[in-house]
Image 1 (cartoon, rainbow, N blue to C red):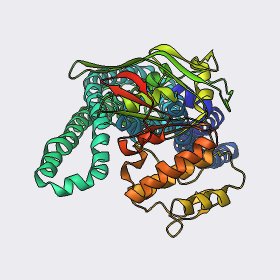
Image 2: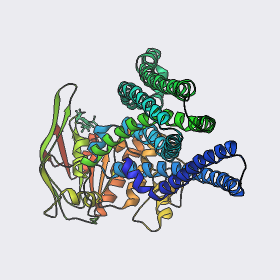
Image 3: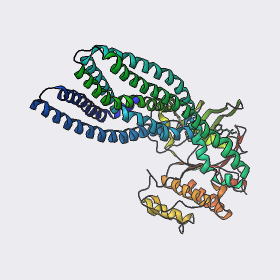
Image 4: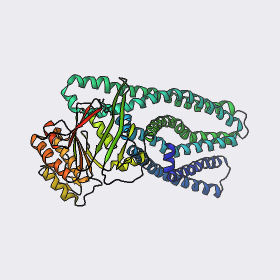
Length: 537
Ligand SMILES: Nc1ncnc2c1ncn2[C@@H]1O[C@H](COP(=O)(O)OP(=O)(O)OP(=O)(O)O)[C@@H](O)[C@H]1O
């Protein structure tokens, strides 16, 4: 994923890196100019002008690299979010259900921010590295003995970092896994707001045992990881000072040209200290980002495993949709239980209304997801006009359907729809659904969504109507409607859809309307019983 980001922001990254490297080289050269000026007997104009030239370049390089870092940060964040969202949009629904919304939200927010934070510090790391390497070379030119001592100190510092890092990474990994769970609890704070307010003991247990413990686990692991990094960073600082002492009091004793060498070292130390600390400090951030990048990579791998190539051929109509031995299974790991739907054999034709009935958990919604192509059959196949639908066809196949599931989502505005006089038709439908005093449609958007659940469901029905697809699925749509409106739905809307040649699948428990359908499908524990033809009332 980091390589994807680098590819996407290549030009910006190169420009920011060049600006960083140029300013770093100017910095090192400036030090050598200062040292020469301090120790030389007289100053040449070349020395003076090269010094001023260097500080101007240094300033420009720093301004440019800072501006580019900022652009890079925003660009990388946008790219990463686009990339992950794109993967989520093309993954199969079942895979999204398995990954869970908490992990996905955690990836899109915290993990993304963490990765980008490291990514944008890359050019400054480069700058620091160039300064440190440049200073080392300068030290080598001043005295090889001191240079060797610096190498030994760097080796000891790296060893300390390595030991601390391997321990700290385990803590960071644990905290990042817990963070995914924490995002689930954050969602429960708003989604479960009513339940948490109505039940004090539930609220207490949630706050203390679930949310509180999760926050605490993240805090503890992050603190432990950060403390280890802090110790290793302080160890690095200690080595720097020990090195200065070693140079000042031991190694510089019998050096020729002592004045120039010591002035040079004093300057180099002060100049190099910031970048060296910057490098040491960047390691924990890099590790946190590395762990976040791993989490994102895991999710992307899971999403990609479920991504199917889309041919882009959209189906517009059909004369028959046939399910042949279609089977789907859910495996519940915790209870080691398996729910099996099917094998289902079924056919749908245009201009028909089918009621799907069955007890809770009998598999009605699952069957609707299979019929609409939201789930791929584990075995068996779906045929449209005798052509089997394979993975590549499935997205095109899904475009035959509009559905209002019981956990529907109402988007702020209609997106791609089949009706050109959108607002007019939409408002006519809104009036028909008796919502004209509450909401209107303008430029394909509803004026408000602050409505009751039943009213929002009516808007979802408006959307399904406007999409004008040949097959409509309503999953317990009428459950939230008042008796008067139930009548409108079953006695007016469904017959209208039927006479417009639409195929309608209605999941319902309203048995007093079943006689209005063409057939009734009954599900029992995942098995489809023989279809019944409703008796006229
Ligand atoms: N996302 C899921 N992950 C795992 N198991 C699931 C999932 N959705 C449903 N199930 C299992 O599949 C079974 C059938 O669920 P489904 O939602 O299809 O039933 P239903 O007939 O629509 O129920 P209801 O009338 O309560 O809406 C349930 O027993 C449930 O345990």
